[in-house]
Length: 127
Image 1 (cartoon, one colour):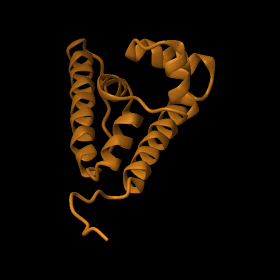
Image 2: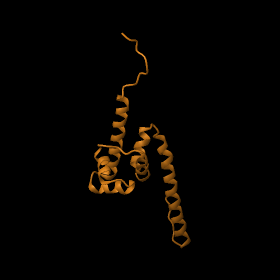
Image 3: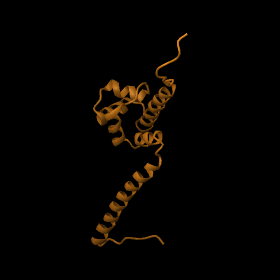
Image 4: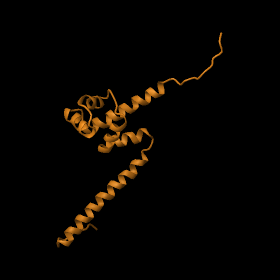
């Protein structure tokens, strides 16, 4: 009998589980935000520039996006963005992204209030 030599490789099951978890997370995010309709497919196509078949595969959960397509989905979909952060164990990063959105909305509201005041409209405040 020969002695065992060479490299040992991990069983691919953890990698396979991670791929399934990723595919399912993107599928859940897309269907919760866009639904499972033909219009959802068209929206994903418009966001990423992929073919109808590719977008349909993502929305049906049979395949997951890779690379630049994932980045485009994250750019256009807060739900996909949050799903990927969660998979990466970085859910706290969402808090910082949310604060930026809240700050922008508050600035917009303050400008609108300032414009109303400049035009002589009374602005009521709650006590």
